Each structure stands twice: as structure tokens, then as C-alpha cells.
Length: 387
Length: 71
Image (cartoon, rainbow over the protein chains, first blue to last red):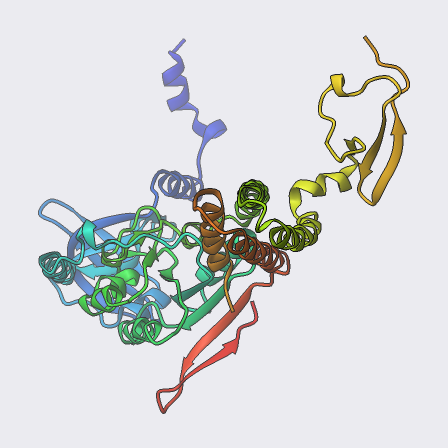
């Protein structure tokens, strides 16, 4: 008998692949293996077909690969690059099943020279802004603790504004947002942004300015890396937050602004205090206010008593008037939150002279007292004093 | 119109003065009254909250116009 290997070679009929199966499987394997990747190479033989698609090769010293760029992307790219142009091509490798051909489907192409020029311009702008001190930490202004009105420079069409509104509604619902609608990418974005940032200075009662856009690839953030926009941002007279791009993208406006937020939502979190914390703070202030006044009244009373007999009757009537005013104010004080607890079902026991009974020892058997509840008082008596 | 921020700032100041300074009772009462008014105003402002979203436009003549933006 022959070995199993030989058996397979000799009788293929049971386990044979069709060409289509092979090519389809190869395509699936290739597509699953590669994400979108950037490939650097030289364009050769780029031809725009009547269908609108482009076909060309990318090559380096050792290898080449067949490339296709579909109509929509080709239209966006403009004219086919000349032979020999060195490019970065973004795309996905696949297998063209019709010809069983390994192929790179390109979505975008950037001439390396243009990328180099853009990078150079970025470095130049960064250097001059740095030179002028626009990134200096000492320039950074703090965010106001309780902002009321915030100017937002962004596109009303984008998700940025929606995110900011959502967070604002949650944190500081009595806020006012003044939106300055601008293009944030492409032609006109730089002019729009500069104009909007200058307009912020003409608005009265603005506490803070957020400039933002959603995340995007490098080119789409270009406006936020221009010298003009950075200088306009530095010229804004209220503290600024730059919310451009996402966590991984940093723009020059992020460096110029007083604060940087990774996302528009984060910018809104920075901009607004939490109204629930402020309500707690108001409760605290109400309690301190009440406490401080009773301290004051006691001091003033003692002082009046010391002024002697001659002034006694005059002082008495003055004191009386003040007592009345105090009583009136105390009733207002009831509206403040420390006494609001009564509404929740608590009661305060008070003895005949108006003192609050705080400890068990104060309740002697038979003692008559009053229970203060939310809407008045209830007479009460201690039946027996427990042990 | 004062803002919640104004109210909070003034309230802090009032409480500090009432707790610390050597004040005449009349002055103290006046401060207290103002404090109560400010507290009430701030609470009402926070409670009756409605977010305003407005769009700022620059007109041809350079004037600014503020319009409501449906959020």
C-alpha cells in the first residue's frame, strides 16, 4: 500500500477546490488580516478610466503592487498623479477575484512632498507662536467658577454643539450659550473662525469661550493649526477652552487656549459648575447666615444693656423695634432650608419658654411642651420618663 | 440682573462680614436682609432654569444680532 500522502495525490476527486473557492478564500483571508493601512510608494502608470476609477501601480526598489482607486475617492483626489510621484496611500489590501490578483484599494493619496510642506508649515507656526509666548503657562487664565454665559465657536451642524448643550443642560441648566456658527474645515474655515473669535470680544457679559470641532483626520484639523486662528484665539478677552479633535489629536489651538478639553463634552464639564453642588452650598450659606445673625443680635443686646440708665428707655424702644424686625426676619428664615426638614416629617420639641429640647434629660415626667411640625405646633406632655 | 455667580459671591461676603466684622446691629440686619433676598434669588434662578441657546450673527453694517437657536 502507498502512504496517505501518496493516496491524496493520487485520488484528488474527494477534496478538490474550485478556482473561485481558492480566490474567494484568499480574498477573505487577506481582508481579515489587514486593517486600513498607509503605504508609501511611487505611483506608476496611473490611468483614469471612463468609469471614473483609477488604476495604477505602487512600487519601491524591490516590489510593486496593483492599485485601484474607486470613482468617489478619485474625484476627491483631483488629477491622477504623474509617474514617479511619491505618495502616502491609505487603503485596504484585497484580492481581485476576476483575475485572482492581489490588489491594494486606495481611499486617499497624499504626495509626500505636500505632507512634508504641511509639516514644515506646522513647525514654523508652532515656533513663532512659542517665540511670542502664546503657549506660556503664565498666560493661562483660570476658568471662572460660576460661568453664566459661554460663547461657543463651532459649526451648528456638527455634533459638537449638541454634546455641549446636553452636558450644559445637566450641569448648569440656567446657562446661556451664545453660538457663533463657523465652518470648521475646508475653504473659508480660517476666515470664519477668525471673524467669530473677534466677535466674541464684542459680546457683553460673556464669561468663557469654547472653540471646538469633532475629531477628524489631520487635514480636517488644519484650520486649527493656522497662525491666524491661533492668534485670534489668543486675542479673545475671556478665558478660552479648545476642544478640537479627540484624545489623540492635538492642535495648536489646544496649546494656545487657556485650557484644552479632549472632547466637546469635556469642555462643557470644565465650563460649568455642577448646579447640585451649588444648591448644597446655598444651604450651607443659609445656615451660616442664620447663625451669624443670632450671634450679632446677642452681642448688640449686651452692648445696649451696658449703655446705662440714662439711655435706658430710649434704648429699650430701639431694642424693641429691632426685636420686631428680628422676629420678622426669623419668619423669613423659616423659609430657608435648615427648617425645611420639618416638611419631610421631622418635628422639633420646644418647651414653654421656647427652648428646643435636645436631649432625653430635658424631658422630665409630666413636662408640657410643644411639638413644632411643618404647619404649626401641637401641644404635648411627657407621660413617663423612661430609664 | 445679577447672576447666580454674583449672588454667591455677595453671599460669601455677607456671611464673612456677619461672622467676623464688628458691625452695628442695624448694619448687620441690613446685610442679613440682603442675604435672604440673594439666597432666594439664587435658589429661584437655579430652580426656574431654562437653558438659553442663541445664535450670534453679524449683520452687513457690522451690528450684532442675537436670535434664538432651536436646540
